[in-house]
Image 1 (cartoon, rainbow, N blue to C red):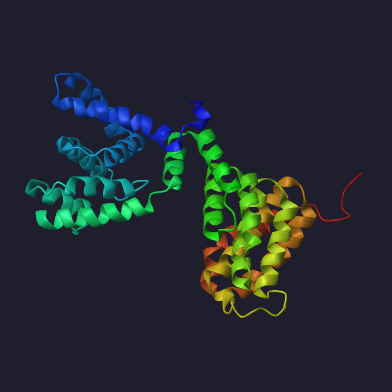
Image 2 (cartoon, one colour):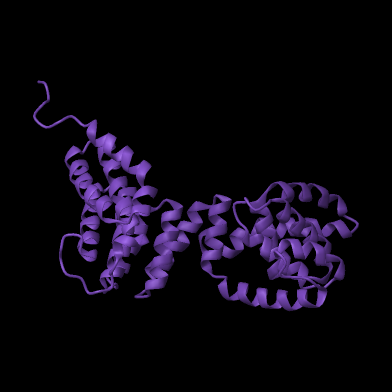
Length: 322
């Protein structure tokens, strides 16, 4: 099978499966493989995630010592760790064994949700059912991204986008996942398709500011400005009537996000040497800052100050020297 035809799940689970095999060897005559694998897993949270997913898809009764080790490492990562999903996954795998000696560790790992061995099994069953329902192609795409396998993740997303049809939720996930990979062009394609399916002012406004962010990411600042113009129109910022779905938009997160994208575009336009776009966008940004709630404006104060100074530093029209 050509590498490009291999399911992404098999690609990203490969290192985890191999490492799990080595960890399992710790209870066999070839246990010499286990010690180096433990060291790598302890130091590498991405590899550890792959091992946990591999264990979930190939559960074995004899895995409990390995699973305890993995859960201990996840708990040592602390609350500031990049991700916490793997801690819950490891906890569910350990809890499924229902051992009394694991209760103290599980109580810590689950923030007190597991308090006894009988409850641990019930909790694990519910958690595993929930995880199985939540698992999707996006699970493997995110793991591929964390592993640095950008090309196969991007290929999988583009194939999914080609077959997405008219499913708004799927298109939104595809747009965000492609943006996360840095493919703003394909993310824009997904976002434009999504926008064609949105029919309320609130939905259009919410997706237009995202489109502006994506257009800016791929370097089309003019298109970003047009998307923000449509976002302003959708919320009635230009005085146009709305369909009633954006009431109090200026006091909600929607107003803050639209304003934030204006300020980001100002900075991008200044950096790109487009003073006209920078000044025009700053004019709209100032009006929005005067319109949105005080807390939202305060949250954007640093960004707005940067944008104002950037525009102030532009050469004024008609003052250029020959």
